[in-house]
Image (cartoon, rainbow over all chains, first blue to last red; front, side, top):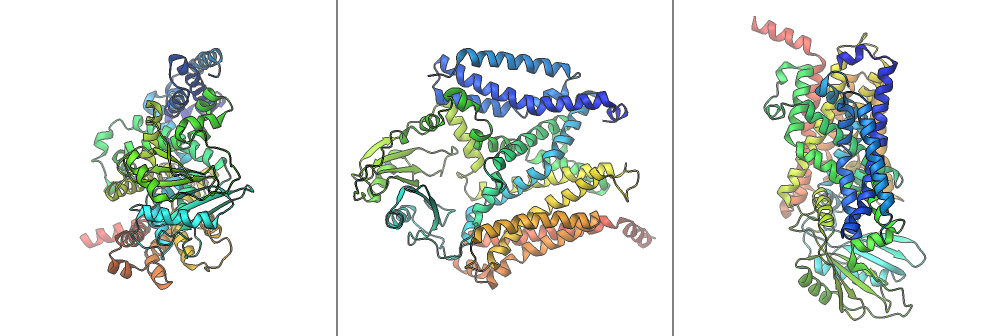
Length: 102
Length: 513
């Protein structure tokens, strides 16, 4: 990244650090929320509990390595921040409304 | 980020690759060795013979354990198959203690060879890194996730992925050759690298990503495991009334009929008690999925009680991914493919790590005194890329040379394995970079190539005897170790040549004149 190293000021470094937080920490949290939401919502559609649990886990594992690509590909760090926050809010609401299936 | 998609992906690829590189190399190297884990297991126990009938072996183990572990509340035995020669047995006792042993299928009693970590050591290190539970497993999963990210961003960076197949220009030397090599290795087995990382996480999903389980079951993990293997549900409490166990052979015959294949695993709950249950699970031969179907019997009457139902679509997918990672289904040809794909992964990671230093060395202000981060990567590259092979060879040496009666022998083997990696890192820090590569490569060449000689000289597996007996698995293992030695010899000579290119070129020019 020749262009980047030229303007490697504090702002640039902070932006990279923030993206790293999104790509590692927020990524894991979002995947965990996706697993939880699917595991709770799928039983409402008639899927058995064990099937829902495994399906949620698999989706989370497949999404995890792809999210960092999205985080670092975006032109501005704002975009992944907002998209991931919105996704987390949606998944959290879904998981919370559904509750642990009986 | 600045500079467009490919530039940002190149940045992501470089740094995710560097962060996880050394750990993933260790995981790949030991995973590649684990492909032949049962052959290594047999190599370290020369008393075990090549042929045994799994059903007969299970019967002997059953008879042996009923007598040898009378306090057991549970015991399990893994049957032999075409690859395995020992039967791994474990049991848990009334007082909460555990035991395990390697049983000889010919007798049902523990193998007479000195205790050893065997192939099991590489297998365990591959996903636990000899770290306490659950930290080793979590670190392995995190490394796998980083690696998968590095693969995805690497593919986006190299949009000419198809032409990379045919682009290897070693004559260009230096950075171009390393990049070509890295691309060829990456493109060659790309689907393997991605799926082996992802399926590796799947095998540890309940540790690394338990939120599917807790989402659906809350804190009741036991209910999740019961739903995952419904045939094991409703195991009765210990009755406290001694009872004579039913013979195993008729139960095996019934199980093989019900499950449509050979039995590979035996589990007994409450052995020797009126409430005893015998579970027989299928082996993995001829199918990709791993967690296999089973049949549960009343241990006293021998009556069939339950057979596992077919899994749902999500569980079947999970079992398939699990099975693809473990490769227990694979015959010799496919396992060689896993082995070579694993080696290509090692080469991919090693060349990527080297490339990081090669592309930065030219830009160093003073190449004789590089900055700390650069030197750290140089030292760790040799430490990981040469330390792991040396440690693997070191295990074979330790297994042959440690006294048979040594206390805690398998643990000492493990400590020697780790100490060899640590010693390589220290050595690499003390030597100039190119010398460190060349000298450790020479040592690795010798350490691998000499193993068959060492083994024959110390009463272990003997290449000539294996050839005479037609024991091709042991012949192949010995020859593979020699071939690995040959590979490191080639590497040592290459590294030595790269270290001094100028005089050679001068000599060639002189000769041409």
